[in-house]
Length: 180
Image 1 (cartoon, rainbow, N blue to C red):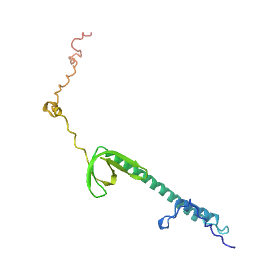
Image 2 (image 1 turned 135 degrees about the horizontal axis):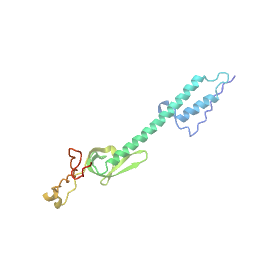
Image 3 (image 1 turned 135 degrees about the vertical axis):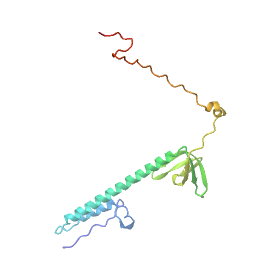
Image 4 (image 1 turned 90 degrees about the horizontal axis):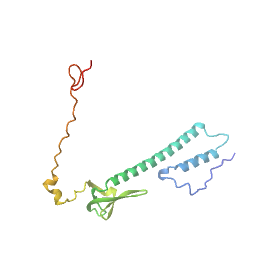
């Protein structure tokens, strides 16, 4: 009986094989379906082998999902870190290895790219930041610096709450009529 081979038609949706000979999940699934379609009916694939391949496919698929989730979490963490720097003083190194510093006024987020910070009139990559600090306090007016303006006003403690007189030996309070 002549043996048949799998068709070699290449479709654009397959995508190239990954470096190192790894197959993507679509290529793996197509290979498995092709293998089932063209198997020898007199000698079908072993059930254990089929289950092992199916388990491998599921594992690859779940690992890809996990990698996507981790990438999404990393992106969210970078965005959170960048937004927390707004109002802070940062030092950064530019493309010419010169160190600059300034106050972060904004954070910009782009799909698939790390966030950038707006420092003065420059957009700075978050990875270029070398130091983070709090901004220097702004100068205040001379009235706020005078000793009288800085001294706290004395506060009087609250008056104690009135207490009821203690009962006498016979259990009556003063001012109550005696019970007979």
